[in-house]
Image (cartoon, rainbow, N blue to C red; front, side):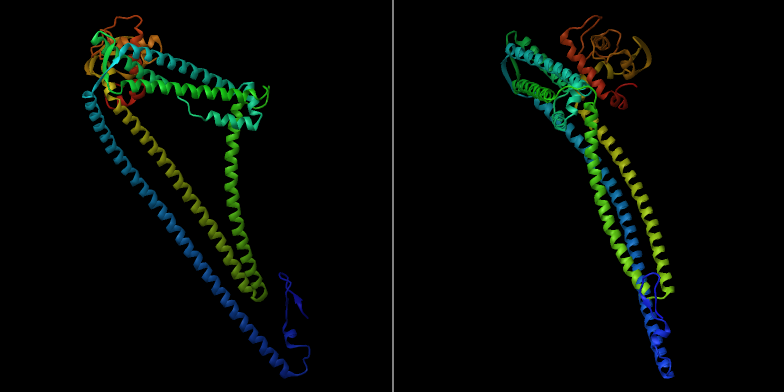
Length: 475
């Protein structure tokens, strides 16, 4: 009688079923047996064909793995090519620095031959004084904004802003608006002081309020004034806008601070991006899994319906071996990918550090005229060295020690720091040239001398370590 397959439910026929119901005629039995043999031969031929197809699939998978290995090798070759490209960029940067030095020399030469224009020095000095006052007010407002912003991140007003998604978003947009830093304003003040010193010197040479200055002198002063005015307006607009945002919300105790809300908002945005990426990956994986499952199910059904148990077992072993091989291969590829990513990240970090150092060195090269002018009392070799607050003597002439200058407190932005820097430059115990500093025996220095001191301090702060590397300063 017929019975159902335990795996598919499809009925299979026994030899008796195929022979028919009646067993009376012997010739009938012989013919029916011959039909079964023919059917068996056909089934075995079909199984051999399916096995051959599976071998073709395995061979295709092997080719895919070989192609993947070639892609990994190509990626490694591309990484090496990028390293060579970085070397080429470094060479081009060196040439650009050399060209920049040549341009600086040409500019210096042109400045020596620039045409002069007669101006009212008294009127310009009064304009410079107004700009200087505006810069001082801008610096004070920047300090006030920094303190107010720091308080806003943790106080009740900030908590009120953090309690509203709309207010929080408006604050983040406002807080990202560009405004100058205190360091920028100090640089403007230094430039303005230099212009004032040049103008006073030009006026003293004539004895009247008419001075001969290079073309563009007035434009430079007007530019600083416009720059200061624009920065003041932007800062005022920013503070007023932030105040309006804070005023629209009621102060509250408890709840999250504005600082925490900003961090969490950034984390949410990052989380959304990560979730989108994960969703795409899962969708691709799901489609691939469904496709593989459908193909495996179709193959399995055909095998269960028509193939012998031996062919079925062989197919299952091949599938298991293929899955294991793919799993191992995917793990190896992931390991290679992670190693390559780490190597590339390390290379990018090193390249960034090199570029930053090169940029800093380029800025130092641009400032070398100022360094030679304002740091002559430091970079000129001499026998005297600072030892705390006293001078020592060495048999070998070397530049001043950067660590000694720092330890003495000559880089501090305070009246005491100014006096100590001036004592190094203008005191009689340093056997190096005074440079821009006048003779000094101690006490408070004139306000007009402070810009010189600040310039020297800024140059040592910005380029001190590079000057030590170039042996223009002792360690």
